[in-house]
Length: 128
Image 1 (spheres, rainbow, N blue to C red):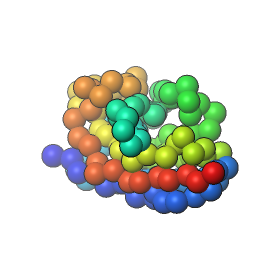
Image 2: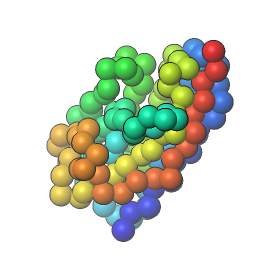
Image 3: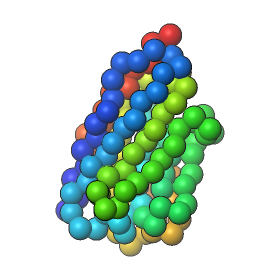
């Protein structure tokens, strides 16, 4: 069983930065790929970024490439999402997710079906 707790969300102006954290419980964190997804009001949840369990492979949605950076610290059982140059369209609830322990160690995945555990979400609001 893995529990994920996101933190770091808030209200910022366009152009600002935020850093989200996702703290995981359990002993299998380093074997699991981690992903960040977001859901804006009235829209479906969408992929943002992911990192493999090894930390060597990452992937990004085109809408955030060059602005967002995913990272992880396996010693701290924590994944991070650094968000720079935020835009109003980045406003959403951001969720972190942990993949099934048997997958995504070498290659990150953007498929929701590959993720076994989800956090409760943290709100990010970007004003114009």
